[in-house]
Length: 125
View 1 (cartoon, one colour):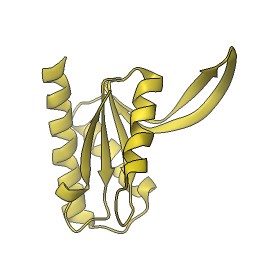
View 2: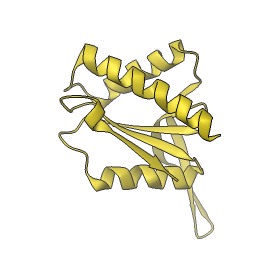
View 3: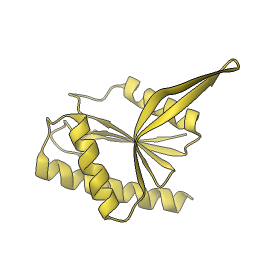
C-alpha cells in the first residue's frame, strides 16, 4: 500500500508542477481542481471531484457536511488551495478529512506560490 501511495503521490506532484509551470499562480482553486482532475484522468487514474462526506456525531448523521476536492483511486485525498501562504489550519483541515474518511494519505497543494514545490505538503493519517 505504501508503494502505491508513493506512486500516486508522484504522479500528482508531477502533474501539479506541470500545471503550475504552464498556467502559473493566481487562478481560482476551482480552475486548478478541474485541470488537475483532467490531467490525472488522462494518466489513467480514477479521480473523484467534490466528494461529499457525511459526519456522524453522538448518534446523529449530518449528510454532506464537507467536500473533498479530489480523491484519487479511493485512497489519496487532495486539498487544493490558491492562497498567499499555507498555514497550519490548512494541514489540520486535511488531517481531519483523512480521519473522517479513514484515508491513509493526503496532499495539500497550494498553486499560488512562486514555485509549486514550496506549495506541497504531505499529510499522513
